[in-house]
Image (cartoon, rainbow, N blue to C red):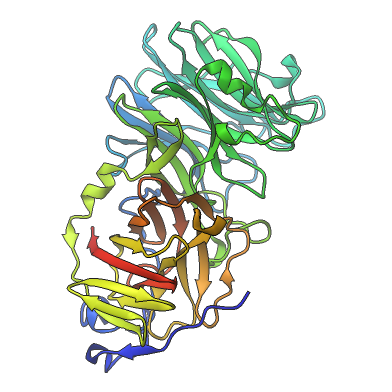
Length: 534
């Protein structure tokens, strides 16, 4: 693929005395002449994250959200990832509490790992539910045996209870084993709990049967005694649905899951008008894809998504992975797979009239970006740019470069394309001297009837499209108008377009660098450009 070249730049008087700088060589840049330069700045993540939670030590893996009906807040348990992790005993369950998905209170370690020789030496994903009958919280989780023998189960479902969500007691007699019911004893994990209107509790478990992926179902009247209800859903072809999550929203039932297959590795969902219709989504396993019952929710940088609702809004939490060596191109399959675990990212679930789902911004996050940044044009392409009162028309291969961002930013702008085949995007980590920078590009597909969001490394040393990213495909808006909102917190970057698209990414070096809006083909009108910070 031909690399994108940095366009000739028309310098303004503001850029007359620019010099290259970095955190190490010019710390004064953060205090003096901040908006007077537009060269690349070697920034790095601050220790704390303001919007997208990460513990002071370690990283967030596999969130397990739960709306607490007693405390009237969300509790988000997660697998605490240390680097390095102990050889055998790793991923204890930690937790945070939040009312708005934007401000988190650490609850510390809640459920510890067992000993090296115990069934839960390493802990895997689970789910929580409150039982008003005995006023106890139940967390069912995966117990991973360290080096199991041939007659032992590598994974079983275990349970711990708590009267206050602080002190948890493991049940040392409850072990739900897959091979007891004809399922795999090595893949039997990620229990999820929900209750139907008849009062019955349901537990879903990701497993295999005779080598094929299944979601097993168990039922209970009291959360103590469980009976097998058979297979809830089979998994098509060689796919494996991790972290299942079932809920009813409006007139539809949904199963949200994370696709383990290396070629996909995204959070997806199935939908049905009834629970039985939902279960039947994958019943035809003959190669016919259930397009009208399946959808994608985000990018490869959002994984293990699970939901919770306060009765008004339903949110989904997943983790945005870190990348070894802060390599922005490590996005795809091995050996360029991102690292396991990272930051906690929350979205609001939006339901459309046809039952399809998309993800939108969280109001609590949006409200935090209250400080307005001044907006300055630092550079622009020599041709193809016209400006009128803060609005811009870009034609052909053109761009406008704006002044430096802060650490936590909200960027918003509106794009109006002339034709549905026009191509545009925006770039981060961009300076006037950048040999490469990172862009979110809205590409026309299907003769412009659809758009595909791609992550690209551009500039004269950039590789262009990054293999393995597998961008997000969505319908072209009928009015050719795109309302773009970008939230950044250090290297975590979350993009929303028209309440139809959510695209999470990690882009190192975003903070303290300039950014641009770009046209690649056609003509686009840019308006309502605003930047605020927290």
